Amino acid sequence: MPNIFPYVPRTITVHLGLPDQWAENVTVSFPDYVKNVACSEIYPTWEPSAIRANVLAIISFALNRVYTEFYPSRGYPFQITSTTQYDQKFIRGRNIFENISQVVDEIFNDYIRRQGFVEPLAAKFCNGTTSTCDGLSQWGSQAMALEGADSMEILYRYYGPDIELVVDAPLGDVANSYPGSPLRLGDTGRKVVQLQAMLNRIAQNYPAIPKIAPVVGVFGESTRQSVLAFQRIFNLAPDGVVGKATWYKLVYLYVGVLQLSELVSRGQTYYAVQFQFPGVLREGDRGGEVEVLQYMLNLLAEFTDAIQPPAMDGVFGPETANAVREYQYLLSMTPSGVVDEATWNSIYRSFAQADFFLRRDQVRAQAAREGEEDYAQTPRLGQFPGQELRLGQRDSQDGRREEEGT
Figure 1 (cartoon, one colour):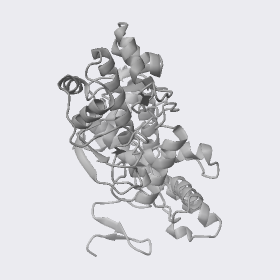
Figure 2 (cartoon, rainbow, N blue to C red):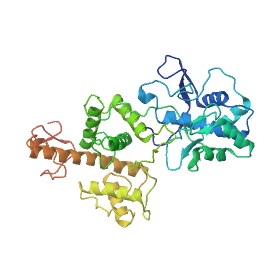
Figure 3 (cartoon, rainbow, N blue to C red):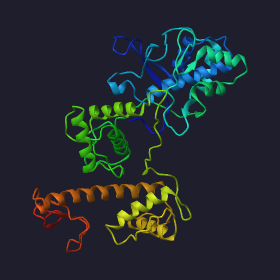
Figure 4 (cartoon, one colour):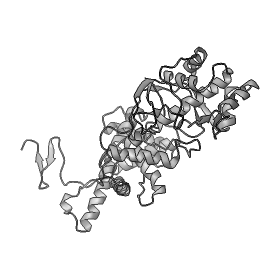
């Protein structure tokens, strides 16, 4: 799935031909790519505001291709092609005009997006004379500039009043969204949240895929069942594990159902990665982030009497501060009652582990009731074991507790 927050890549790999046609791939710096395309698409004699508007469209379109992994999700080893039939004109080795180069150096990490959406706008354009389209008219932009329009007025005219400009976006290396290793039962974290968000959105178009609720970034049994259904529908090996093939099929379909690579995109929103650190929380704060914190503390309170569960009202009052201090004391952290990044991440890790084991317990207990599994194999999470537990103890295979080394 595309990253939540887009960045400007330091380099971009261009395929010098049609996507399925054999051609060389060249990797150039992103500013050099934009300069090349701009000098191939527009004239250096145009008005500065027209040049600026066209450069912003070129940047945004290219960033959309990178952000949506448009070509990598289809199995191609490049981010964009050099052809106007699919993308933008890129001519290797061409001359670069000085005034266009200066504009690109100033704004290469600015881009257009729709308000409330994350992805860079797929800012399509055409020359406006021999070809027309729903996007920007290049000659039309020059005509507006000659009448005194600035670059944003030009962009509003062609892309609508609901666009906005992101300025000074961060730079980064091109990185594939795939986690690098398969996701499977028991995994936790942001990549699992991305997986669950993709599955849930695709399930709207393919109802045979069971939805996952809640999306908490824990790869539990419900996520595995959703993955299995997805794999069966799309003729992938149904192993319930999200390897590279499954991941990029998900990316491909997710981008497709939301039309993220189209000018009329339905939009990728800030899709509630609820368990990322929201900033320091302390007594007196209120809102959704506080409610998420209270939700995690309530679940952890199910497994220890050392934490008193606070009300889930979204208000960081004395009760919540006390629960935070109790957790911090339990984990040998400074019991300040303030949720800094270290405290938040620690609470989330504990919560994710507890949530996973609780769900596994429920699944195994159900299987035992149905005669599918020996109850002795089910975890006894939350039950007092009948004797004190000490450092170094472990469970033997027959269920008896042994001292380490015996």
